[in-house]
Picture 1 (cartoon, one colour):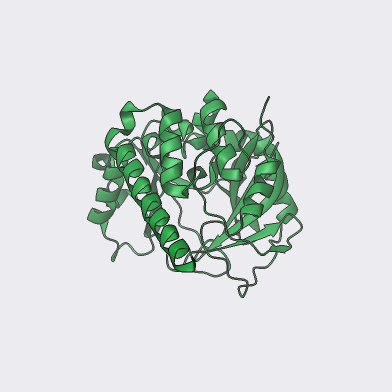
Picture 2: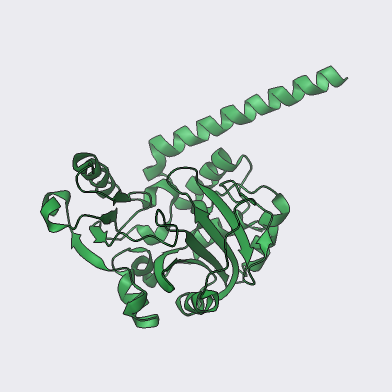
Length: 305
């Protein structure tokens, strides 16, 4: 019986993996011809390994998928745009919270090395993960950076995971000042999860370009022994930010009137700087260490009736 049961489990696992591969292939090849709802159902099962419950969503990921489909406002496009969001931040918080802007361009052809300082950060306005960091102009691979940015400019990021706010953003490139925190080598990213406009959880990402890890904290800076997508590292003791309460208040102002929103900040030389606004953590496909924690976060999202 034990042998037969084990064999049955292996067969089921193989079947599930095959099904996931088929669904992923359908999304890649025919995604633009599939409705957002059907696409998300297929992609969710392909990436998470279980069916997406949109009628009665419970987990954090499920509710983010629901929000993609049914919580759409024009202002979200502005907030997701890495250039246009600066005006929103300046209005709500003040320009002192913005990382200095070095320029904005419509294409890589307009962008010239001589227009930039020795250190800078390039990124596209309409996507994620198109960041190019220059710490030294002499060793910086300009051609590789331009290829990466051009590839991003040619894509509508919305189609990947149906994150609606990205759909109508005008693709551009911005350059910002290169900055580091007290480490002198990186910027720890303080990502504040808000529900109903109120901060609930703080995610700190560090060593992102080498050995990406992620620790979680309460708003009282108590360590949470859970994992969302990237590994935690309890051995790394991250000090409570000097101006944590100010950071939380900034988050409240930016997230006011929203159902669920993540607001990101940096702490640099005793000052707080805005990072970005994110609507769907990991595009709503985050892997949690424990299902109960996914449900706990999901319970914080109060969907409209």
